[in-house]
Image (cartoon, rainbow, N blue to C red; front, side):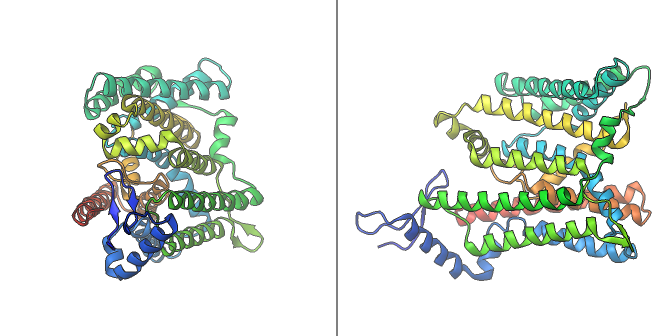
Length: 428
């Protein structure tokens, strides 16, 4: 009888073989739990730590800026401002996660985002269209752009780096053309502005995050049971408990920060509506990736495109769909930024692309494809946004921001490469 767990190329874990009989899934799970227990802390640190490193980083950043800013950083008003600041980065970060899961890159996200925002503004202000129609048309244009990117990458087999780099230049030119002769277009439509200026009521502001956390925990446990029944490797109860505990703790602290009284009788602003939209998008994309065949195909293609093709997966179709979805999300992020800024700018933000990709990578999404969760964007965006917000509170210049953000991104990529190498060495 062998006590070693066998792992198939597709990541399927099978139980030890006893004579000719195959043990049950519960027996395999119990064996896996015993192996996890035997590894101890040292073995755990060599494995996949999930969100733990970035969560610890976020806590350290928050504590430092809280003391350095004399208590301003964690003030309810500043937390609301931080939530607004990271929405655009976070929405584009979702798009970056999808593309990175394929092992590809999209350098046009920032240009697409701002071009679609400008198109939305022009349709509303110059063409007189209703705000809701202008928003829908701008999002559709983003989808068409993504389909074009996916066509060149998947059908014509041109590297995504070249296609999206070329697209970034072209869409930046489209942005200038759309706004001519102006360089800035003011958009004061009440409906568009309300996306960022409206805050959820205390009931919704507290109830919705709690409901989302409950849905996440319930679906994660259901997925764990399903994987255990089929004999697939699952996370240990201890790891899940720590993860759920951290999520509940962070959610509780954030909600308290949003709604605590800043002075007698005066409470914080609460949860911005645009932040709720962003979290809703993350939840939808997570459910698609986790519980649909399309989501499984995305991870499979990112892990091994050739093996996926031989398994009957439409690799080209998956790539086209992902790039279309990424540009659609970029357009939504641009509209949310338009709502917050109240204007469309002809110049592409030079740090928007970097920050969106950094939010995904810092959150734990692999640059090599096939590994990561869309929830990583939340912590990644919070780290990026907290650094920018904190440095602004300390009156630091743009030069310091670039240096710090670059170092944080380098550390995240280095950690990803080292973890991938360690897992490859250990046979995971």
